[in-house]
Amino acid sequence: MKLGQIAGTTVADDVHTKYYQGLSQEEKMLVILRDELYDGSWDKMTRDLKDRLTGKPYIFKLVHRIEEDLARIEKLQSYETKYKVNLADYAEGEEA
Image (cartoon, rainbow, N blue to C red; front, side, top):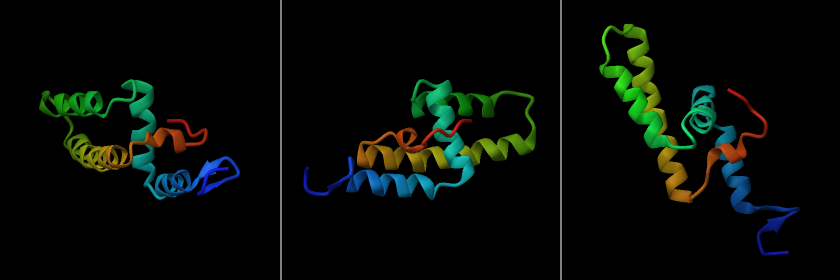
């Protein structure tokens, strides 16, 4: 067994699991939707949401939600890039 590895999980896995569990429901939903609808690509998801923002007509409330989701995506993508992980791996059976 490697140093830092307990019962098949690593300390890093535990850190990422705790991070995922601390996400808001909206953030968790974005992680799951990204994998299900955008082949795991934050770039595709971000592009789609920005395209929706520029489309007319649109509902004002939806615009705020998209802007909030874009900020959430930036946070989640930054975490995944920094630690080279896919947060969907820590979703443990959650569905959109």
